[in-house]
Structures are given as C-alpha cells and as structure tokens.
Length: 158
Image 1 (cartoon, rainbow, N blue to C red):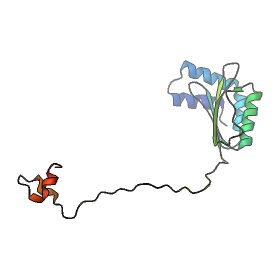
Image 2 (image 1 turned 90 degrees about the vertical axis):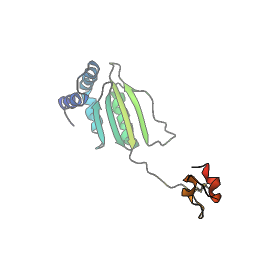
Image 3 (image 1 turned 60 degrees about the vertical axis):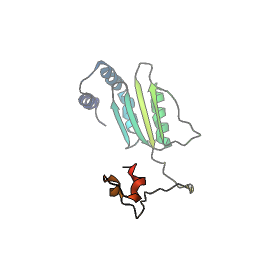
Image 4 (image 1 turned 120 degrees about the vertical axis):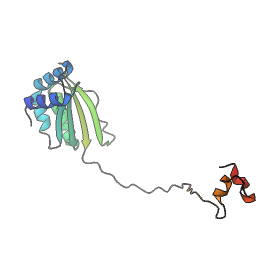
C-alpha cells in the first residue's frame, strides 16, 4: 500500500488544487490510516483514494470480503448508511460509512462471483420492414417540365 504522503501527493495532483474540503478529507484519511491499511489488505482487488467529500474505497470480491470490510469499518467506529439486502443477490453495493469525527468513507463493492447465466429462451415476434420500389416506375420523369401520362401520380411527391 502507498503511504499517506503518496496518497496526499497523488490526490493533490489529480484535484489540481487542494481545496479546504479536500484538505479535511485528507486529514480524515490520515486519522484513519490504520483502518484504511486493513481495508486494503482484504484482497488484491482494492483501491483507496479521496475526492472532495470522502475517502473512496473500491472492493471487488465475494460476500466474505464485503463482510470483512463492514467489520473493519464498524470496529473503527464507522456506521453504514445502509446494508446490503441479504435476500437479493445483487452484483454491486454502494454506501457511505460515517464516523462521529466527521470522516466519511464511500464503499463501492462489485461481486466477482456473479456471472451471466442463460435461464431460458424468449421468442419475440417483431415486424420487419424494407423499402421497395416498383420495377416500372421512372422517378426522373416526374421532375421534367412535361410529365408523361404514367407519372402524374408521382409528380406530387417530387
């Protein structure tokens, strides 16, 4: 994992200028650095960064990885804004965790166990259209000053 100083430099460069709010978020990251180190050790598919409003933690993994992240944040005093619905097996989950000292962590989880599965076949009838022209129609005749007898019906179209 990168050091706090590396994170601060990286975020300063990506933000372009260190605003007051970004400074507050970086100060939160520094206060909770040990917790962030534990989060990053969950697996190889983690990323920690900061933006103007929160510490951002992206995690890809299985249900046990998400439970571990919840446990680490809860033990550190963070409260989740919401919890995943255990009845639904969703491929993604996001929420903010708030700390009493004002620190905020955005957790974004993507399951690596979800996959696209064929569950059946659906046949849908759909109208098919194509453009067809009559073989005998001479479309250029309707543009002439003197139209021929057979093309009078095309003249209003041109």
